[in-house]
Image (cartoon, rainbow, N blue to C red; front, side, top):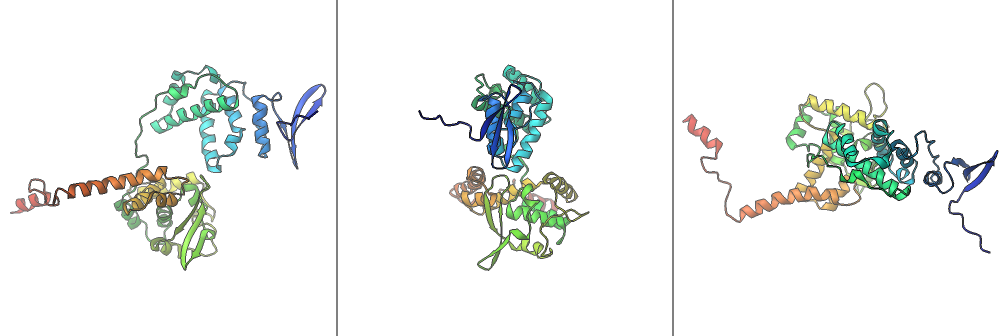
Length: 359
């Protein structure tokens, strides 16, 4: 008789005073597995244990939004996320747990999801609530045998700015550089973000260990924290000048003023916004990342060249930059077929009107 294969490797049964407990053991890692054998909580706990993570001890009533969030946080799906994504989504889910944790998720309707969305200040934050609730319902259907509807899917999405964060213009970059001179930390941060496309998390950890030499030319090579995609970029002269002023034994390019330690991503972002206010520019670090991609697109870079700068896995986001650049070029080439359109009629020429007034 063939022995049936254990569907949950590493799990063994313990019986203490008549009660059954399930325990996971693999090498020097040991932990208890919650829930009855084969239950959704048991499966989630086993998936976590395989990744050497202990399943969280649930303090929420089964079937509630808080309980569902705990199941997700203990799942392999969550554990496979990057460290930066884990931090951001955990914060978002903590808000959901505090606001709607006591309610049973299977009883929620579209109107309840939209009421939760309305508690957020802006459209982007409201849409994040819709996205996260939909993600939780999908997780429940795939992993917890939930067979009910997904009301978040049918909640009305709030209208947002299609362009998202403000993209820096060349004039705004020049104004910032005029306000913050060579050798200043503000100037270094801007040139690093603009020339490398690094996100806040990556800017907080970049240093001389990421600088390499190839064919006699200095480069910055790093792996993006959010996507784990590697980037290998040339160091342009304007950035090289700033880096040359830094001590060669400095592990981090960007450190705090009070003590030589790095920033948290959120803290660096807030600090940089203050420097933008000093220069009277409406900018952000993410806006510089977009400006760098726009600059490449306007110069004729391909989708994959832009994706390499952004450290993206595919060209989906890069397509938006090349499409905008191509639209402008196509418009120019189209109007060029009509002949010379550069000479304004006097009624549209502001300069000509000013000259007439002077006469």
